[in-house]
Image (cartoon, rainbow, N blue to C red):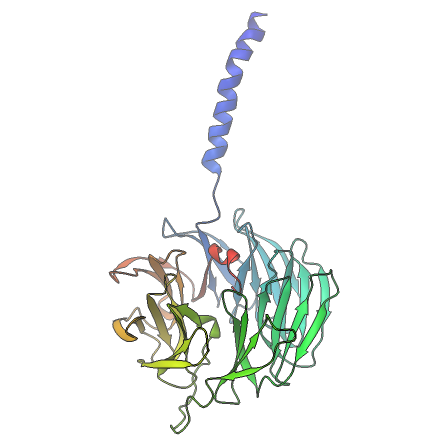
Length: 387
């Protein structure tokens, strides 16, 4: 009896010790992010608050044009490789949970608004393939007979994507189950090269390589009608060689205007958020690749194509003027703001590091060594449409 009572007295202490031990080993996901290490086919897992790398996952194939989306619980990163690989990475166990080769050449992907479907956009053999996010089992194959670009998630368990060869946008609706209801919108334009969806999920906008302008769709319409915007924004001026096509993911709302990089030009364009009409231009140091708004919209950070890709310019949104410039080093490829915008992380590929800056003082706060880093993705993207 005495031994039994002694055990009962010790039990709360043992349970408390176990809880403390487990708590010490817990890690939340909201502070995490990943950095694509393109040459080594690996993913660096980082912690924002600690400004540190905490792990690396290898064996992810060709990541030369890789992008990443996250599960709603922020635990899993889905990595879309150029070699057609779709990889599911567990950020907590820092391991590869599942990997499938779903095509010969892929160009990005998206996750549905309910987090249950992952879609991949393909160059070879073209079309879009959709997978169960839990198992990576194939749910639907949507052949298009064309290279597909600009794949995004849209509200209502939908995916929108555009055909390079045919100048069409397809909207695949999975709201009723595994068989999509596909709407085809023709007349998008000649050779659309990339597309985006606005943060409210309403407007889908495709950039045109074969024409001087863009095409917008209002996804609240049934069916949407193509609307040409910014037509002829380079008219009358000598076209410059395009060293790198800008990424329209950088199109972002800054105050009451959108800002986006101009193709083959040393400037960014400002667009009225309501009318989608041009509202101004800002001259820049080089041809912009990403023009990314700080989360509060007050600043826009711009990086540039080769050979001027060692520089970042910061534009003040109210005035539209360049207020500061930085030279982090050779081959600045990507910028990612922390969720509330107090810091920005910058990949400097040819210097083999990530630089971290204060977005108000522009002071460099730290750096992280990385192998040929390119894209930086924080888990807060899990709760934003189009990212």
